[in-house]
Image (tube, rainbow, N blue to C red; front, side, top):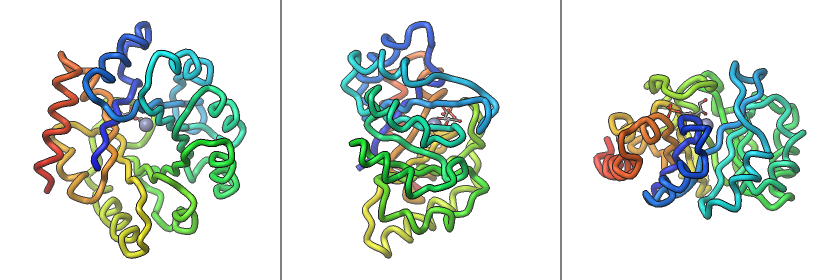
Length: 220
Ligand code: DX5
Ligand code: ZN
């Protein structure tokens, strides 16, 4: 099952509720919410109060991507704010499996993310504990960057590993995803597609979501 997850990083922050309504009407599956702290990545975005304010405005699955150092400090706040999926970077937390277990204990689905240069071996032992793996296809911090084709073999290796072990995880890709790059990502085994600028930068958000979904059918 392919899922489309528009990232609000590229939305108009002065009209977040309206922007979210648009992607919900367009049939998006998740709302991808990028949280940055100015330490793990060189940018700052939003935190639990914004997520809590948006929660009653949308029925979409809130897919919260924490690009913050020591994310374990904020697991409870994001649970209370209404996150459905909470993804932490393997590079950012010292006790990864403890953090993942805490996310699940608080009633959320747990995700683990890897930067482009981090090998899959960093998460091998937590694969049975997570619901989703997010592979970054850009170096995180900003929307609108170019898809790194060097990550495609990593997507394919992870999908093979999951199939071999019989672990039915969602494999999310994030960064530079648009109509031209969707096919190669899906072809390699991704099934959750984050897209920021390709959706919110388009003249019609609805057409952009449709176009992305259509492009998944031409997988390479
Ligand atoms: C990047 C964020 C992404 C970003 C993607 O650090 O994690 O979710 O919004 O934006 P695009 O789709 O424009 O590359
Ligand atoms: Zn993201």
